[in-house]
Image 1 (cartoon, rainbow, N blue to C red):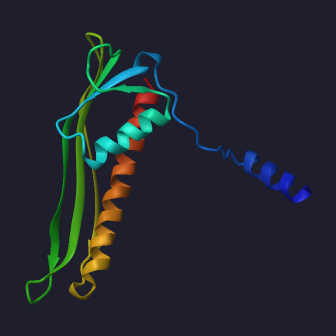
Image 2: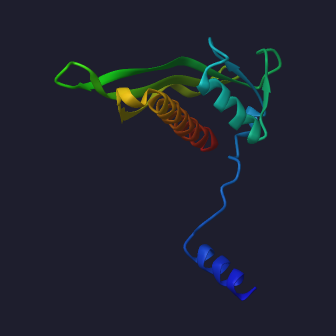
Length: 156
């Protein structure tokens, strides 16, 4: 018990706080997400985070108090380097999202773009592992993008 008390005291003295759901503006209580691709990794992650923050996400714009528009949702990879035999040895994974937020006839977030990039080495003898690594990198990039956007929304 004494050890637990010391750990709690140490954590609270350094400013540690348990992460909780973001507090969204009250105008976003009934939000519609306008997107061309409702199956993209970014859309699904954003939807999950908004719901976790207590936002009711509507399936149509009618009756919504806010419209979060996903203007761009693009991901791919590029070759960064090749070997002497012209075989790719390093790839760059990127994810770009463009978005805006409108509440009624007022634009709270002007259209803006966020891009996150990461890279990984490629080994043709480890194809299955490298494909898994690419998926994990893309998931981490999307999680970071959603976290940044949720922080922006919470600061409104």
